[in-house]
Structures are given as C-alpha cells and as structure tokens.
Image 1 (cartoon, rainbow, N blue to C red):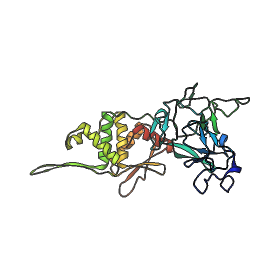
Image 2 (cartoon, rainbow, N blue to C red):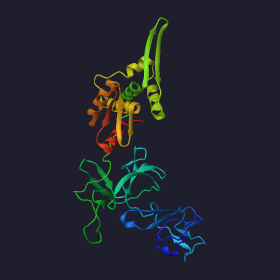
Image 3 (tube, one colour):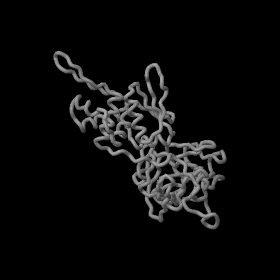
Image 4 (cartoon, one colour):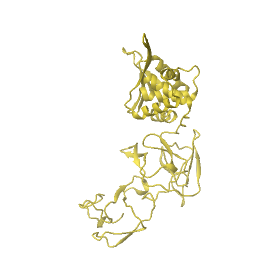
Length: 344
C-alpha cells in the first residue's frame, strides 16, 4: 500500500497495527505481510478475508475514500507461479503430496532469507486453486521432469529465474538456461510398495531391534515371551497392524523375522524402515542407526549398500561394542532414505 502518510502508526515504515489492534484501512483481522521477492520488496500487504471484490474502509479511518478493491484471488501478490497438479510438494512432516491434493492450512517446506543465506522453513498454505494455461516441460540433468507455466520461477545458483523470458524487449526478465543449477533437496525417491515382503522386512528390523522375543522349556511346559515397548506410538501401531495381517503366535513371529537367504528389494526397504524406527535417529541433520548387535549392523549396511546409500561406521572399537552407522550425503540423502523406505 502506498498511503504511508495517512497511516495511524507513528513510526514510518512500520507495519504494526494501531493501539486498538486495527489496521487503519481495514477492520479487525487483517494480516500484515512483507515479501523479499524482487517485485514486491519494500511493499507492505494487508491480507483480509473478503466475500466480495470491494471492501468498505472503516469509518474511523483517515483515508479520503470509503471503498477498496480486492483484485486477487489467492496469493496477495497475484501469484502466477503454476505447476502441474501431479507435482510432488515437500510437506512439513517430511512426506510428499501432489500439489493438487494440498489444501489451505497444510504445512509445507519453503525457504526464507536468513542474513546472507537462505534456509528451509515450514510455512502454512494460505490458498489453493486451479487454472488452465499453456505449460512447459523442464527436464533436469538427473532425468527429473517439471511441468509448469512459463512465468513460474525457480531458485537457481544465480537467483530466481522464470521458465521463459528474453534478454531484451517486453519479455525481458531472468530466465532458465542450460547452465543453471536448481537449488533444493533434489528429486524425491519413489515410495516403497506396501506388500508382504516390505512388511516382513519391517517386522524383522523392528522386532530384532527393539523387542524381547523367545521361549523357554520347563518341566511344566513351554513358556513363550514377546514384548515390544516403544515411545513412538505411530511405529507401535504400524507394527501391531503388520503383525495382525500375518497372525499366529510367537513361533510364527520367529519365522516372520528370520534372516532371508536372498532378500528382495522390497524386504530391504522394509528392513531399513523397521530398524530405523527401532534403533535409528535423525537430529541436527545427521542420520544414525546404533546397535551392539553385529548381525543388525551387518544387515543394515548390506541393505544400505544394495540401495545405493553411502555410510560410515563409527566408532569401530567402543568398549561396550556399540556401532553407529551414519548416513553420508547430508539432507539430500536423508530425504531419499525417508521417502524410499517410509519409516513411521
């Protein structure tokens, strides 16, 4: 808004509401926002929930007019950055969802300027709508294909760039070239298939990593024991559900979690998900699986090798025998692991 000289707040350039909690031009409930994108830098936007294209200015306002026009549906900066409905979006919980299924109120990942750097941040979806317009296909070096509108912008190593543009004339604007590198976490891995082998692998990792299982023979008969205690209720619920699909007693569970002679890829995905839920952690940007059981470490590294993940073992000679497998590759590989294996 360009009426700074008519604002009620005393400090020039401030976006604060007045003492009554009202923004001068609008009724209560207006949200003040600023953006660091080049086209809107230095501007202040007042976002309101309007049911019509025109809004009445409060009687107490010092504005010389009584009505305002609400020109945009959706983003208050007239967003035109459109992507195909099947484009996966990184949600706030680390999962992905097609943009067509994202709704207002959802938490997603974006980026914010932080000093001279840009960092990831969770933000809330404010609006969602569809449009029909000509689309362009952008093919990246790793084979990823993105379908967007011509005016969609991508963050590159040289700043924000549109899909199309020109060096001069009316279409002059920064645009993508073959030498640009897109910034971000990289392509999302395909999720695993939730089948019998995946579930068996998950149960093997979870139960061997965190359960107490066995049976003992006594003169009066055999005693079977199975106990699984987790603070993570989501992983516990998943384990209970998977066990319910197979059924059986402790002997059946022992058969389910037996080490396979020739493990398939689905089993490896499930095992890594289960052992991560049982013995793993991800904090400070570091993925780890820790165990004193050499078999578990051996199978964990075998699965990581088979699925193309780089890792290191550390430290190799602790007195208590604990071995830590640490994933290499930073955020990109951690995201690939979570999407490819789908732990709880």
